[in-house]
Length: 392
Image 1 (cartoon, rainbow, N blue to C red):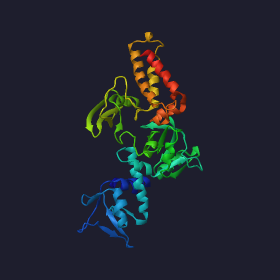
Image 2: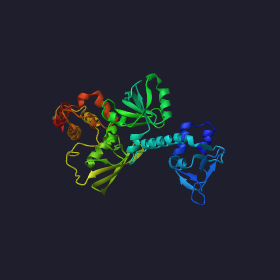
Image 3: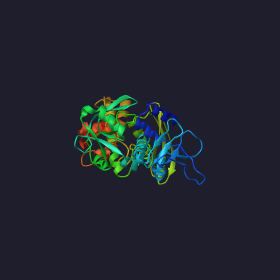
């Protein structure tokens, strides 16, 4: 923390990142008097300040969020490292600014590191959204998705921002779009949940805190569920379904391991799967009665598989295969059999003659659903089934 404050004093750190650091620091030390009360110091106007130090080993450990939301409001202001050259004196009238940044840091941490009990944080924000001038509904426009600085794909997305500096970055870098960013209330999630015209949610584009959220997240949050991998166990039907989910999501087939443990009401499956050179821990649940049904991933519609990726998978398996089974070799028949298993499971999503947007659970799948709506009709799925059956 000392280096952060020094960097700010030297003009090497933005005001926004300083505020993130102040409220995000978990090891502020607050000295206590003999009565167990925080040590305070008055200024020349009599205003009281609680002393928070980062470069000492003694004192009670207090997180930045607790400091600005609980301790300081009962005392006055905060003196950050008051004896150091880089010390900061934060007056009581400016505490609301730090408290807002406390909410921002909590939200940004929840976005970057999904975990349990984050639904309320995601719903309540604070959020800013990109809209057409004079409108309140989030605008959709074409954006690039990058990972590690490398282009992956483009998609039609809505844009959310978590902080004033992210808002300013958008205004400066995307000025040519003639859009504007406005503060949002939590009702926008309900609006997004009712829409099917976007493939994903780009959060904080062109910043180090960029995240791409899937299109089915708004409906899940409104229902009180967080469906992001890592936020909680994903509800699977069988181990075969988990393996297919990993295939569709791009996990390496040669670097997967799992352990199954009994849990309340069923089984918990702890996976370690690798994407490239990065291992990721994942949790899934299985029903207590789960069994590997031959030729099927489950007897009810999946809650985790993306119908769009499943369509793409089946098409890939069937591409280039001969017309007749007698022309196919063993490898080609095996490909057709794998496609048949997946397309049969895919057909369970069909409602009123087509696969609904609710079954689209990735940005890539949503792009296909938007660009080729006819590929998700019952008749299109039936043709894929017939093609696979003829060769399997």
